[in-house]
Image 1 (cartoon, each protein chain N blue to C red):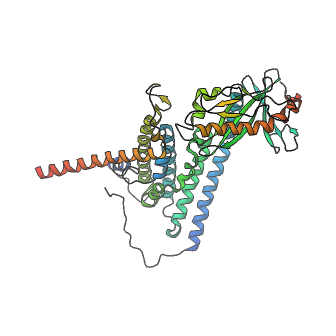
Image 2: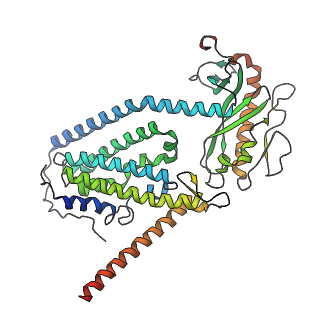
Image 3: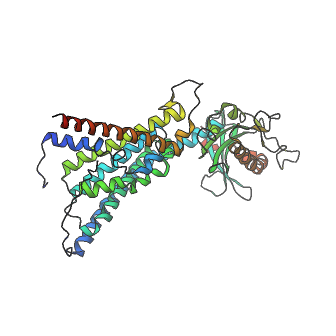
Length: 234
Length: 215
């Protein structure tokens, strides 16, 4: 049972202490270590960037059905739209069809779930004034209960055409997005919760409501700003 | 190389020891944190096992090669730097292979640095043996660790999600035993495996005892 090799070495009364050797060894090890890490980082960098881009792209196309190309935009606090992913503000991904016409928009939303903050990407289609899909980006919800927000097909069906029409003034949502108890959904702006995962379902409803009511009025006001930039049109 | 090349059956012994007699999980109970945390699916268990094996193997090679150059006073610090280097490499490699896998394993890739099994092997084996034996031993212990993780991961995925490698096994009427993919399930399954191994060992001891008395 107890076969961990224990080597009993006679410890000399005082270990020979050689500062030069210690410094030399640590420097050598640190140099080897640095070299190896830099090599691997440089070698994997393009692949990691490609993976991340692919993940973003897959999520955008999943929430905006019909889109075949996309461009990143940002909407800053003053409500200015920029065609630059690195500018400060809310990121908005615009999806276009093959002719370069706007199909929809994708933006991130987040809210506190049962275990941790749930981050998701949702798609919005201006033609039907509705949310056209969601994709959970990060969640730590309980397996078997809260993680049904990924898998429950009835729940996901809530988001194929979730009504997000604006009021007459275009300042706010006509009906706030609300999560209702399982089986109680009556209106197209309501989300039918998963039974047994009410907290996670509500978190998604809250995330969408907060993000959509802040973003969509601004988005609709500045719709022309999101047209596909001329120079990049194929 | 100071140690003479050991005979063939000897190296096989070193390798098998890591898998069976000195299995890091089922016998020595080392590195329990990733064992319990990331074995909720077979794929996660396999990836974690292979990543740990890679770190163990590479750090054993380097520690073994440098064992005469490392002063005793700073050996632990040196081992940690060596281990951390390979963990960082694995971290980037897994990101390059699959982001999904990287997100599933979470912080446990970085935490290989503090896996006591790897530091233990560096201190108790690689720093005292030649390159050849260190490599064989690291492969054996790594294989033992990976197998143990797979034992847990497979059972937990089958019972807790009703799938194997993501493919459903029992049809739609199966109600998954959710607790098995949650943290308590890790303890339950590990406990059952330990029970099995303890029973096997006891039975073996009894048989040898009986044989000895019979003679």
